[in-house]
Image (cartoon, rainbow, N blue to C red; front, top):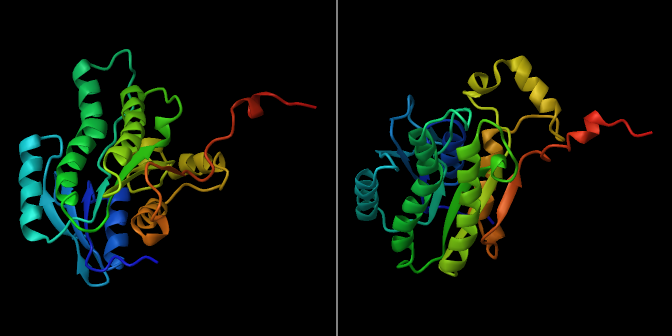
Length: 254
């Protein structure tokens, strides 16, 4: 049911962390993978003898984006799948953060995915087959996250954008989003402090472990396969069960 041979997949921010694992997952399915990112990966993204194509691109810069899209259009017969993975933000207080900081976070996590999607959608609309766009969102989209005001708002907007584009671009393009929970990557230590802290966080998750990049990659494969043939506008929660209500630890009912 997952046959992606000769399909062309564009992954933004696909050089490390979740993005790198998404790229490898599609390579394993014999797809042609094109990575758009600002910096070349430390190591070539490859698996099973297949390599991802890297194109330097700052998706926040329209000129850079348009150049990359034109290059891909010229070299590939079709663009079948777009995964808007690039994103992120450091923790900071909404009270003290600058306007420039807020604008940059919203630009990367909301405006850029819209601009990227629009450009590839124009190509997809002219193709005979049905294409897929997958937006990588976050649990911050649906719950308050102190220190991530702009990021959470942008990721919430990305989920809404997904639902809107799914209607506008149906039936030629399916558009879905993935609500990603706590994932352990090579940068987790910077965010959580140490392996000890990561283990503490894992204990708060119903599945009792942090997510792996592969968990998100598998969800992308699902949305790209015939198994999700009638699914569009969906927001799939990949978070190990989420978080239990805080009051359960505060209250001790008899």
